[in-house]
Length: 345
Ligand SMILES: [Zn+2]
Ligand SMILES: [Zn+2]
Ligand SMILES: [Zn+2]
Image (tube, rainbow, N blue to C red; front, side, top):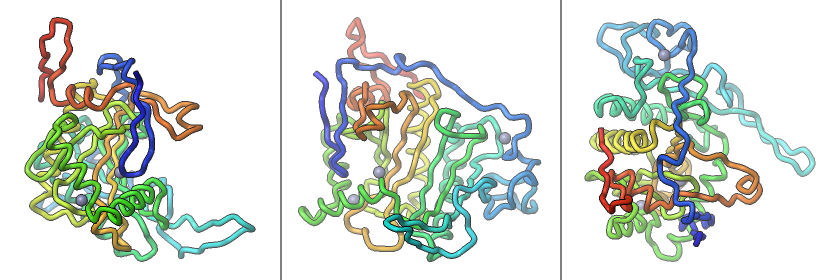
């Protein structure tokens, strides 16, 4: 029987079509790296990008020259522009606003052929440190209401360059997906005086059906009502509403679980394209008690089609309990009843 499940935070229903019971091997193999003749993100080509805003560099190397480990630049083709004032305007019943914002790119490694998950924990720690520093810096700009940090890997996930990078877009409004989560968690808080995400974490750890991985400060899980097969979330186990407030000593633990989770997805799903986004509370007003920052990782395995576009209702062929089992490295229900250990790297 297919099952309807409701996301406890925003109340969105999804269809878990248990009958199809898709295994990782049922999704077509992918590796859609993009080959470009000249990669502007490779060391030596720094002049092909806008000047760097922040870079972690070896001692004695000059800005906008090789010698960097992580490099943040403005996007050459920004979705929103940094210059200008925020003007709101009404046209009859329609509202519009200048396209003011910031759009940055964080080049995560000088190595063209390494993906984020293939870097060492120390290197991923550097990358997360740069994520945090750029977010803290952009927060100072009073025109911005929200900062979205995200990563697209692979053509079908929207990447236009294969060299490993993340993006940071500062917007003058709070995006709808985020406000839905803020409202959902506020309603829960008003009713129970507890953070819904903290409650989910506690319950998931005790049920242990959808846990993918954990360390002393972070948890990776397959959410109860995922929209997509193998959708995976990473959350701090301690309550915290804003990602940029991540303390120095927690950056390494976050880097470790993010790398671990992405590697599990890479191993089980044969290097899939993916998106991840960091959902954090807006820095401008207090959602500190009820909201809890997290990362949503969506491997691109299926296409969003008419029914989903028309209804906002998603059909997911892989129950999250199965996805978690695969990602934990144990596949149950093999023909001989023998658990198969998926090798972990
Ligand atoms: Zn490159
Ligand atoms: Zn919480
Ligand atoms: Zn979220």
